[in-house]
Length: 337
Image (cartoon, rainbow, N blue to C red; front, side, top):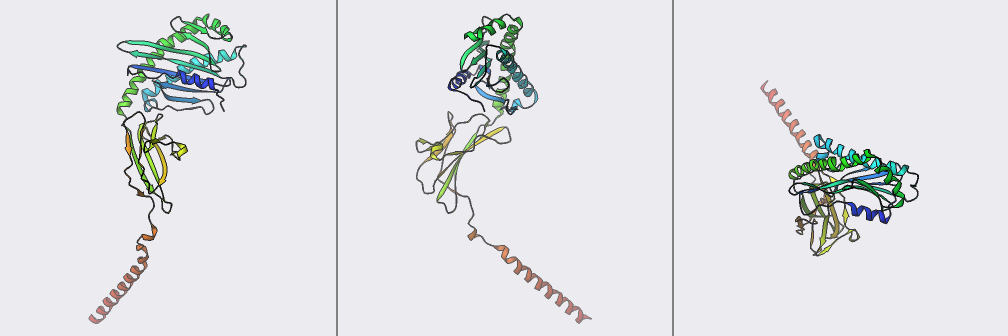
């Protein structure tokens, strides 16, 4: 199990590239965390949203967009993931093989690689990322404008000197940031736009079901049809937002099977409540209010019409009628003869 301390959490929170108000700013960023030479996790971010993750424990890659799973989009994303991880693997191996670096106890090596571009009106690289952190502090980074690696601490100076003297290392990282990453951002953004246009808008419903003999009602908020990313759904009682401590239950994000996902949140309430309940997607206009109606979840078996009990009686009557009809036919035949 990974051990992550406070500085590292701050490091991660500070590195996510977020969208600006302009739709023409796009980015790809890979973030990595290693606690041993061979144990690490990675997350790939597209326009500030986590779209791919990997863990050396499970060796499972989980792309979160439909276009990444098949066809040309799948090929593009495989190349994007591989080239980004190559930067991490090269640096991670070199740093951890350095005699002055010791990875023991709660030591953590971090890395991030990627670029941000702006298309207003021409393509412009606004930021590049090729950095390593050690225990939540800056360690080594690539200065894109100077085309030089720069050490942030004394222990990184030998690596800085070695990498700056190797023209192949400089050419490789420059080519990745200046061309490959930019190209992948532009192509990925076009797939994102197309999928966004094809994906239906999510729907929301709030309904209640009564359980027999409990005096309770389970109120459920269902939001479905959204892209499988983190979705924040608020559940309100009057003006108060509810949380787990209030008894709110959540299924978590689950796939629908059509490339979209759903999320359910439920709450047990009294069947005689007069409070107002509503739910909706945060930071959006999708909100629904409970109309006060309650569905009966179970059927009262005592009120069922047990028609199946009449079946033997009906069958017996049919048999008597058949015997009578046969006897009548036989008597008629005898009389005629």
